[in-house]
Image 1: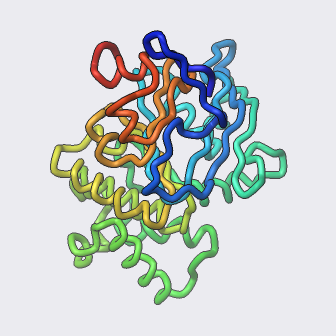
Image 2: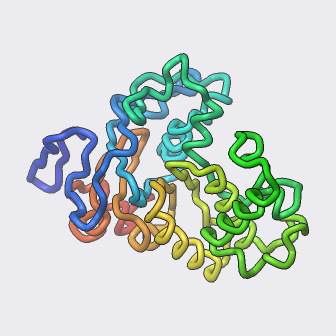
Amino acid sequence: MKVAQRGDSVMKQDQPGQPVTRNEDANHELSIRVNDLNLWYGDFHALKSIDMDLYQKNVTALIGPSGCGKSTFLRCLNRMNDLIPSVRVKGLIEMDGRDVYEPKMDEVALRRRVGMVFQKPNPFPKSIYDNIVYAPKMHDLVSRKADQDELVERALRDAGLWEEVKDKLHQPGTSLSGGQQQRLCIARAIAVQPDVILMDEPTSALDPISTATIEDLMDKLKQQYTIITVTHNMQQAARVADYTAFFHLGEVIEYNDTKTMFSTPHTKKAEDYITGRYG
């Protein structure tokens, strides 16, 4: 991170890509390293020299005004932006010492390791059961019916949905409520045993009760997975995230442990956004 100003003081981060303040209660083993990441949509420079270290078994929230690059950054991590013809990417995104953009990278295998949960619940037009087993079968993770049954129950339990659907596994996933559908999508994502779960505003289309359920679920899932989530809800970021990155006009203005970010941010821009002065 570059030099950051707050009032008349200047604070400099010694290690680019590291949070300004470390959360000593959080796990600090590296999951993904991002170095000098730039992205263009045609001639539009959407992400500008992003440096971030993302840590295992933590929730990292990406906040900032609409159009500032949060979702674009999220989709870089599993190369979903590759599906857009006008996109050009430069820089390093490293997992396990390998650049995810190297030519030999298997994109399908990458997306198994880095799962995605979208803003609007999008269950497949299949049964609840088949929503869960479809991808594991495609990746040859399970074949026997008994193994599939075990996988379905485990994924649905981990997503906090088993007790609600165990007697209707062969009904369509689309028959569930919005909050249940989103938990089904989370169960579908974790069924392939990923390392990282990306969540793009996963509760923005849900009611307050379903939102609270998903937030509780995120807190439980971080014991097993690295979670990176985009949110416009400042209260949600404060509740669920260990770390928070503030994006503005394609740049990371501040990356901090969440408690510090929401109590004593190091940059004036972050403070103004968090306190509602703009955005």
